[in-house]
Amino acid sequence: MVFSRRRFLCGATAMGLSMPLFMRALEAQAASTGKIIVVVELNGGNDFFNTVVPMTSSQYGVYNDIRSNIALSASDLAATMFDTNVSTAASGATEYALHPRMTALRQLYGTGKLAILAGVGLPSNAYGNTDHEQARFAWSSGTINSFDVTETGWVGSAFDQLGQKGSLPSMIALNNSSPIIMRAKTGAPLVVNGNIQYFSPNTGSYGTDSTNRLNGLNTNDDYALASMPAEFARATASETEEYVSTVQSIFKSEPLGDYSTQYAFDPPSTTQSYSPVKTQLEQVARVLLAGSSSKAFWVSQGGYDTHGNQIANQAPILGEFSEGVSQFWNYMLNKNPTIAQNLIIMTISDFGRRPNSNSTAGTDHGTATVSFVIGGSVIGGLYGSYPSLSALDGNGNVTVPVDYRNQISDVCVELGADPTTIVGKVYPSLGMFSS
Image 1 (tube, rainbow, N blue to C red):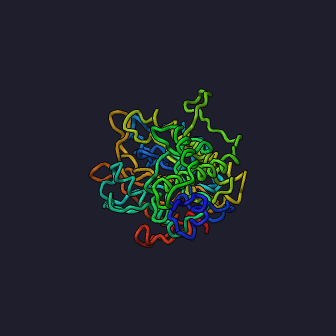
Image 2 (image 1 turned 90 degrees about the vertical axis):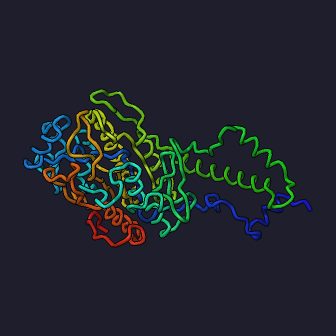
Image 3 (image 1 turned 45 degrees about the horizontal axis):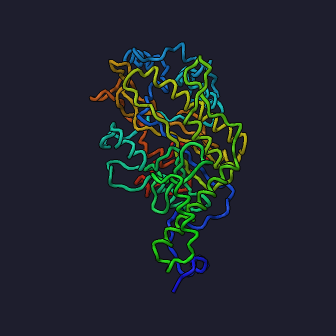
C-alpha cells in the first residue's frame, strides 16, 4: 500500500519513530533558573607569573632576576596592584599585581565578585602535564592519565546528572567546535560560530542546493513506508529546518545593539578591531537574555603559547580577555541581576609556563597557572597559594599548590552535581562560593 506522509506524521508518535536526540520535541522556552556555567579557555598555556605578578620584596626580586627580559616593571603595575583583601585600593596594595593591561579585571576584583585561584594545575603524577593535548584533555575530562580512554567531559557529566532538556541543548559551544569538556552520555552541545542569529546547517559542497533538495522531498507525499530511507531523510531534514528556525528566532529576539564587540588591541592607538572573545560572550548574553534554558557555555581564546616575544604577544590577549569578561559580567548584572546572580564564569588553560624566561624573550611549558572565577555567589579574593619562585624542581618548574580537580569539584557542587563520580573523590572546599 502507499503510505501517505500526512498519515505517517499523524501516527508517528504511536509508531515510536526514533529521531536524532537534538531534534526531539522542542519545548517552550523556560525562564532561566539555577546555576549557569561559562567556561573560558585560554588556549595554549597562559603564563601565570606575568598575569599575576608577586610584588612582595622576597618574590619580586627573584621574579625580576629569573625573567629579566620579560619581567614587568613595578612602575607599570601601580594601577593593577591588589591584596588578598579585596577592599584594599590599588594605591595601598603591596602583595600582587595583575598584568597592566588587565585594569578592567582589577576593577571587578574590587567589587568582591572575582576570585583569583593562584597556583592551580595538574598534579605531578599526571602524565603529559606539560603537553598541550594531554593537559587539555585532563582539564576537559576532570581526570588524569585517561587520554583517549575517558569519553565524557566534566561539564557533560555534570549535566548528565542535572538533566538535559529545553528548547535548546543545555550546553552551547561558541567557537565552532564540539569540545571534549561538553561530551555527555545524554546529550550533545549546540555548536555555533560568530553571530548565532545566522545559525544554519552545514550543507557541505551542496551549498544552497540543500534547500531545493528538501523542497523536492517535501513535495513527494507518496513514500511507501515510514521506514523508507527517503521518508527518513525527508523527516530528518524537515525537523532540522524547524530546529534551525527555532534557534534563529531565539537569538533574533535579543539583538543586543548596545553590546560592543570591538577592542583596541594596540593601545595607545584608539583603532578598534573585531574581538572574537567579546563576540562569543555577546552570544552567551543573547541566549540567556532570550530566556533559553541552556546552562553551560564554552568560549575559547587562543594565543597563549608564548615561547617567544611574550611581552608583545601576551599583553593584547590578556587585555582583550580582561575587558571582555568584565564587560560581559557588568552587562548581565545591569540587564538581568537574577541571571547574573546565577552565573559562574571560570577560566581554564592547558598549563602554566616556567618561571625562567628563555633566550627568545618567551616562556616554555610549565606547571602552575591561575584561574579566574567570577559570579554572583563568588566570594572575591585570592585563593590557593602563590608558588615560591626560589624552590624550583629539577625541570625548572614550581610546585602545584592546587590540584585542578579541586576547582572542578567546587564548581560541580555549586552547579548542584555530585563531583565524586566526575573527579573521583571528595575534595575540600576552596571556599570561593558563598552558597
